[in-house]
Image (cartoon, rainbow, N blue to C red; front, top):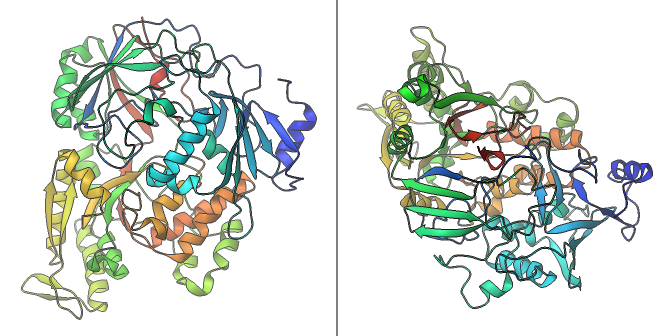
Length: 606
């Protein structure tokens, strides 16, 4: 494959704004959402790995809850960690590998190269002739087309939504597949679809033909990844063993990764038990998401004598947007004034100080810790976008920041905010009688359930429920096990719940699964609040067609502003770094931390 010439590089940076004929394809070893990839064709490894890391040893990990399936591609069941997730994908692989130190760039994996139409209306994947399944069979175009059709028709909602944008999928040769994409309603090409297809997981046709795909299964799968399942104790543990015949071990995108001979994952009923197991050296690495525990629970002897390293690692990725999510499918929460009033009742400063030792920052965006967070007021390109909808939007959106209300630290700070909430409710027709708040019109009591799956969230929910009681609102806190929670979450069976969205630095098609009206009643979608807003639909739908990074950021600002103004979530907080504790006797990690933060697959045993 020839190196990219200077002329080709110019074209890559230019075709977004000046598309040429679609039939003039460019052959590439890597693709980026915008501009050109960071790494050149002759690169030997990613910067954030140790290419000379030794192979060997066992990595012991932990997960909370349970699992009942080895099929991670459907909404039924709870799949085991490590099969095919953004974190720890060990068995199944996509066509191309994502770089962790770029916003959105893909490099050759199962597909060693691609031919990309200049207007991105189609892409051809050239499969690596060395690519093999774990049983030794070759990976072919038939496997790719089988995977595409299966995930499009029976996969998770995000897969079904993405792959329905494909107009034609065709086999050009035993190792070549072309996908041609449908234009959007506005006639524009979705610039993200070639990369979405590059991230498509590939499944072996011969392993799935004799069984039902959309059912849970504990049959060990055949994959193409660096590990195979070595042992299984359903619901309790799973062990992966590095495949010595892994076909991709010498690829540049794999060098320095997947260094442990075995990875063993134990499941714990809840996080408090998992923490005690870590202290007893039952597993090696712990990502601590509980700031209170980070500040107080790591004072055991192994930390003092250095056997356990207790460190905060910086990152530059978008933090998860987490909070109390209000289900607008419920009649009570269709009222945006009630949702707005509830924003005044969350005492972040008290929670941060008393529960988390002032470690957090308040979340003020659905894209916190990134340039994607909407500025205080709309300006520039974002303002141009919102002006198209000005007649349908509140004038306040253009003059008032959409940041969540702050309860100051004065003695009457909370009281002042509750008075504002009370005034909003009274103005909307809510009335208080015998310390119980009633809805306008139907005069039903304002009461709801806060559904949780993590016992560590109970303190926050109970504190909030105590504050709500001062407004006459009755909130019940209900914690259930992870399997029950996932089932109820998939069916949107809750009033309020705590959950989160993980956004990348390059948001695109997934945003319609998060916020789109069509996803509001699609079981298993991530539109947890049930948002049905045509303006949000319109703006979110334009993200994949962004022609420049500047345009993508402006569209995301507009989307973020509308989401915050809708009061669909009472936002929590974020750290801006990863709290990691690990037993250090034999574990080592690279010195370079990429844009996305810790890459656990790059660690090794010494």
